[in-house]
Length: 236
Image (spheres, rainbow, N blue to C red):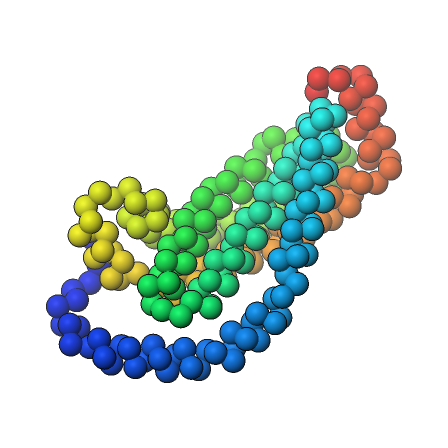
């Protein structure tokens, strides 16, 4: 077990740990109030954006446009991922007990593991072919390659650790309860939070890319070109 630790030497530290936690909660209280105030409208804006992109995706799917489908499906996916990541980040920051912080960290680790895999798949051949069909030039693909490189770099550095968290205590693949709890003993929520922040960098770049791409796809000339393509090949 790579991340377990011996707790036999810390059996007498519970009062000390409780005092530290109390002081931490006291210190964080005004910061948590500020965090809630600053993020009071985030969820409302996020839900509105998700609803708008969902409508675009449903329209593309109903029309049979594989190109607009690929564009808006990727956009909706990253919006849902970003919403969940923000929620876990908020849970980690606002949690009032070590167990709740660790619980949020486990969920975030699973999300990062699955999200990194899925995004790299989304940015693959089908997505790129659709962008070519929509007339996007080389600068778009250079930017897309840079974003993909960011996700690949994150995966190479952190995928093994995230996989361990997922298997041992996230998805509960490990059936030995003692192994699970020893792994939890060594799991640092702050480490997972840092990974979430690192993952957010290429994710934000992808969000910006998708915003520009959505605006491009709504251009009348692009929409007309796609309508002509559908008329010629209605099943494409």
